[in-house]
Length: 177
Image (cartoon, rainbow, N blue to C red):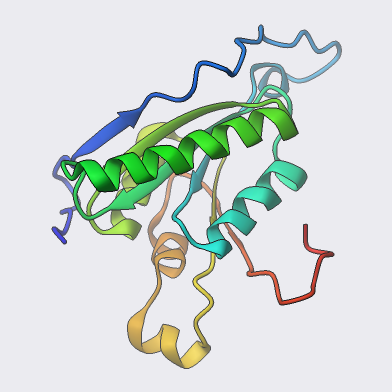
């Protein structure tokens, strides 16, 4: 995997999301602040794991508002690999449909190449979102100290937005959703 340097550009591919999501006009909210009326940009880092899906579900239920736009970001080793791209695109399409059905929010998606923590922080710098939402990997404290984690890297290095790290759901615990 190629490391993205702090001041160099990185490779990415935009994802065309399904056209079955209808285009909804901006909601006209009375007596609301300008940010609420315009909506916020929320970056959600995703992968194919259950912790990432739990963080996505948490954001839909507890954090997103009607006029918001979510930006799904998935870091991969190569954006030129068609199998990786198509698998990631299918995941993002599924999540975009779910986001519209559950929270009626708009979704944009981007697959980025490189070290996950660095490219997520670069995307946050580009978008200037209201927040970056991500899940945990579920490592123990000792494993995290020795191996590090993407969420820990983003927590310490994403300077353009607050990072919300959603803890993993324990087996049988339905109260977090």
